[in-house]
Image (cartoon, rainbow, N blue to C red; front, side, top):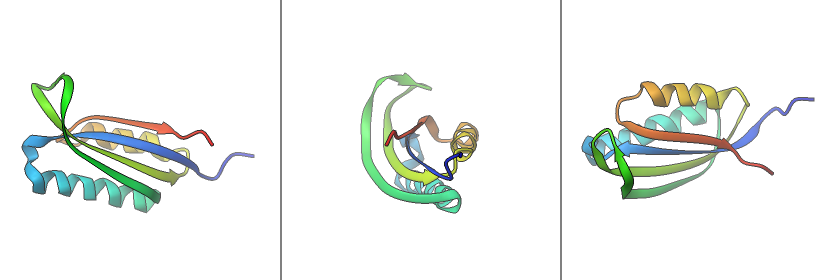
Length: 98
């Protein structure tokens, strides 16, 4: 029998040029999107950090990790939305093994 829902971790690196309001708006956008498609277990705001290498000519990024529970088809949709959202430098969503 297929699992109804699975726990995931998603980490996003946002462009610091958005400013504090822009970064917070994007975080809220993704928290809302995840809440509508599952449930948020934890949000870790790691803040502004220096990148190991430049991404899109940026040397700093704003890191946020969200742990959530959702149906198995949602992470692919979340990744698709990350890719088309201005201000998201990088993202990674992985399933958490129980």
